[in-house]
Length: 203
Image 1: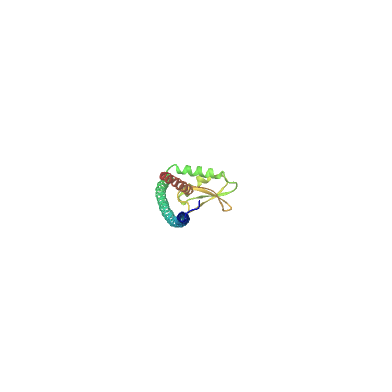
Image 2 (image 1 turned 120 degrees about the vertical axis):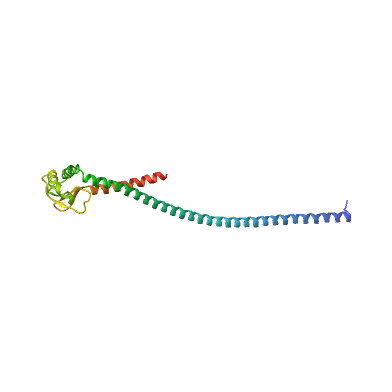
């Protein structure tokens, strides 16, 4: 049965409205997708900007902290050195005084003879006995203790504390048994020990 004009008009209107609705839905979908793409791109730009900003701030802060730590470590190191030197000087001053007292005591002469005899064992040829000026009165006893290899006695103004050294007749110092040398060795050992002790105390 053929459609009436009224029915044809209604069918045409419905088709036009359907097409319009379909087109509107498609356009809405495309607009939403474009909006999401723009939003995502903007979000990425913002995130990148924020990341760069905080990365720069972090790097600057890290450099600042590292510089502060370096300055603090340097200051602490100077404190260590100053404290080490202070303690070492006090200990060595007391030790030097004890050595000086010993060199003035009644046991020193025998010590000097024993020192020369012990050093002479390391010599393979003639040698000269070297003493401090203050020990010259003991020279005969010390030469006798040093043995037949000793060809003479000299003084050395560099020897202040006592003891002896033996110098081969060629002129080279072969063995050094002076108390001055012993004090220098003690100083080096004490400074090393104090440095380790102070660092251990911090930890």
